[in-house]
Image 1 (cartoon, rainbow, N blue to C red):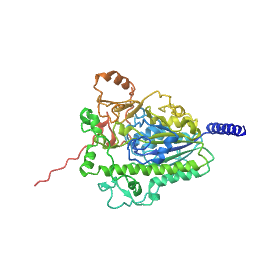
Image 2: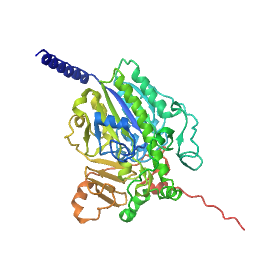
Image 3: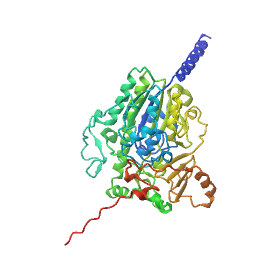
Image 4: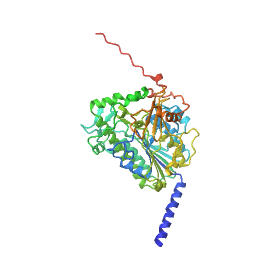
Amino acid sequence: MKILIRTILLLICIHVNSLVAQQKQPNILFIAIDDMNDWTGFLGGHSQTITPNMDKLAKMGVNFTNAHTSAPGCSPSRNALLYGVQPFNSGLYPFYEHDIHKQLMEQYTSLPRLLKENGYLTYGAGKIHHGRNRDQREWTDYLKTTPNKKKFKKGEGYVKGKNGKYSFRPTINPDEEHIDYQVASYGIEKLHEKHHKPFFLAVGIVKPHLPFDAPVRFFDNLPKDIIPPPFNETDYDDIPAVGKSFSKKGEYNHYLTKGVWGDVRKAYLACISWADYNVGRVLDALEKSEYADNTIVVLWSDHGFHLGEKKTFKKFTLWEEATRVPFIIYDTRNKHVQKGSTYSEAVSLINVYKTIADYTKVKTPDYVDGESLLPIVNNQSILLENPTITSWGRGNYSVRTKQYRYIQYFDGGEELYNHYNDPNEWKNLANDTNYKSLKNELKGHLPTQEKEMVSDFVSKWSVEGADKSNYKTKKKKTKKKKK
């Protein structure tokens, strides 16, 4: 009887402590990852991937298995998430030079700034915004990283060109000479410190962004032969012209001709494991810290990445490989309710802003798009009001639901895929009369109004859609030499 009473009292104490923790403003551990697609264990995108730390996090929190970016590129994706506005409502469709943030900070309240203005300590490191935006209105402190010259293991990997951007090689530098290690170490340092206010700690992991260079041991841990993704030679037969124009066939064919696709994919997987290792270091520090029971962990990637699927490389398409992202939310105050949960309905990263504001009980500006995911973290049977919308240039949009992806290009070209029986998006159903009603339903979710593209500080190479013709790069005429 005494044992039963003690057990009941212990359970009551745990419940009371949990309620007390949830009444306090929680800390936010915000882990941003660059260019990571679904080649992780918890998303099952590649059978040879090694991601034990993120897999562990997915088993503790809610794994959003059908999460998608607002735009398949770093600049527009991060602008949408951090300022809380969809590209078609902000006009920020393409990439921008870093000075754009001076203008945006006058127009919008970024997520870290919102929290700082409402009593949070805000710490940042690595890549959070696209560009070096360390505005004091946003950040209490921001790490200045120290780049080091890379040293490579001779005779391994592949490098294209001379500038090192397209490098797929193992490094032999000490861990601490890598930027991501420094970024993770900063996060660990902040988790060891005593804070007199709740904090927002943003840890921006850069890998697996190009170049695909990582410490040699992460290459060595992978099999010699890397399994290529599924491929269909006739895939392009039913894709509209604008969709085809997004592909990077030149890069695809280069790696194919050189016979180095295995090196490229192995390097990408090695970078994913390296990113996972540094994420794990930060998560271990959280677990051992005094903030282990009052912190919301939000892990996300800014967009996906093609590694030969649909004869393309990199991002910049409206297909699954470019839009689908890792996305996990773990509320340490509510460990038992959410443990190992998955949510397979389509979810957009545009919801991150309102979700974090909801957790911290901070009111968002009226212009902010999206909806809070906090109710879903607590109850995975809840459905969102809207499907996900991804933009890549004004007039080019993808609508993703649990089962379907519909794409409409600015010139009227269309694609429709049924993910239940065509997960690789090989059969375009847009012209199938059996799907006319469904297609019209999905089209109803497209924006009815589009903001004109912001032209200040625009990176001309990235302009797509209805504005592309105004930014065509003029080729210089070369004079023929007389014989």
